[in-house]
Image (cartoon, rainbow, N blue to C red; front, side, top):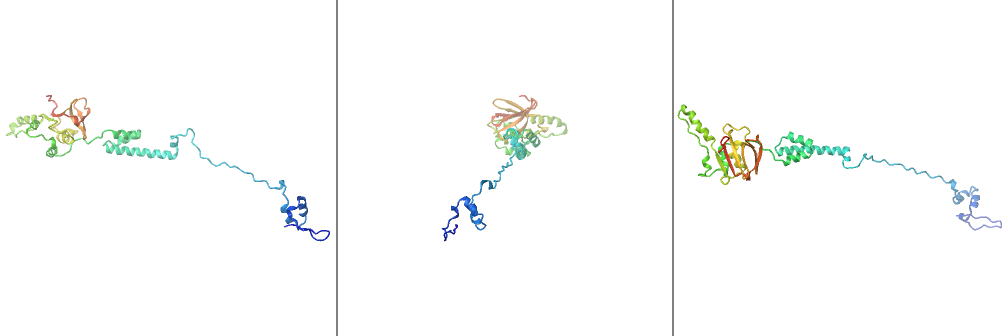
Length: 280
């Protein structure tokens, strides 16, 4: 707390605090081993005696390497995650192509092959194109087909009803076989006329009444028959119906190298079944 001095005249001085002494006086008092612990805290330390501060070292932090060149969305595809995403999209493109081939009844190899060369464009092109249906009409008996035709069956006494086939009577003896077969053959190629108004031209009617024209290889009784389809704008002579939907059908023409032509069911005004050599 301080120092008390003994006076020469006798007695003691007042207590003097350590902070009131000057620096030289404190250094003088610190020479005494007993007073050094009390005086040293008040003696100022010279600047040279202070320890030098540690130097601050600035270290560079690790940085992510950026790809060289321009930074665009295409440059990100060269990274591993970008290549993985591109691979997934390519596999999804092939899967979509297979599903489109099944949905449109197209060859899966052709659709997937084109989609592999033209991703995204191939599946969309086949999806927008009309599908292929199985060639050949429904394989049922003739009586069942005529019963299902409904509106396609002509009324009794109508002009079209008189054009149905007639079976020639059986010959009485073997000598008349050759003579009796000729009228039967002529009756087979008798012209049939179907007019709009007397018949409803829909998919069921076409499939039931003209089932033989759906076959790729026609039978002997139908190989010389043709379909004459008349519309307000055009008249077509077809040898086969390639496919049909609810609103349209595709036919192969007798001439012009078997070219396939689309005909809308709502545009048909008349259908005639005749022999290919019958020009009437």
